[in-house]
Image (cartoon, rainbow over all chains, first blue to last red; front, side, top):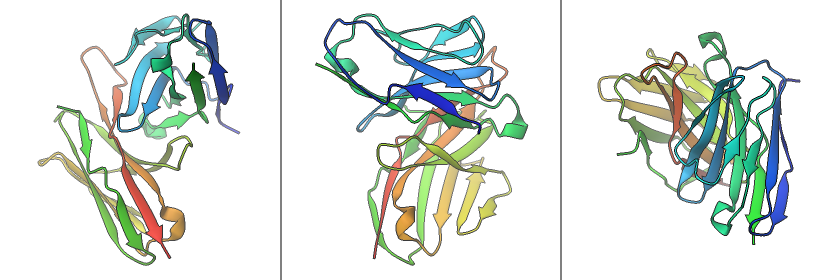
Length: 115
Length: 114
């Protein structure tokens, strides 16, 4: 089954403790992206990657890092989490052509709470 | 100005009603348009793409007006299971990009009651 897999689904952590949220897709998509979703603010892009070793900042990159060492994986790293990073996070990948409609496939989300 | 603007609602309608959502986008060079559906605390899922000539999928009809930079979604004969948030999504090309970037509206909340 074609899918984007995120882990963990839920995470409660303390301020300053480094964490990584993993994301993996099995569709051979080149483009992957991370979003955070907050009430009233909608989906905001954190980072995206056009291909292996090619990453770029989205709208809200501060406090986050990403890496793209292989096509299928795109982890999100919070080096020193703070309470304002409490949010619902989604990883997504995109079909590379109009055949795929350019639409996204999203992971199931990671609900992060930083206390 | 946000790239994509939507009426946040909420829309509360009875079963069987017809409901329409509207969305405007700011980049006239936008190329592709979509409606996504998001259930509470779940991931957004593609509902349908929006084509220039308008398109229909069962009870759902999507229309695009490029001149007015306006997209709509019409749901006929609403079902309880249609209750969700509907996201308007626009793909806009930026200089140097061959794929473009997706911009999401904040979503319109729909509740269908019995």
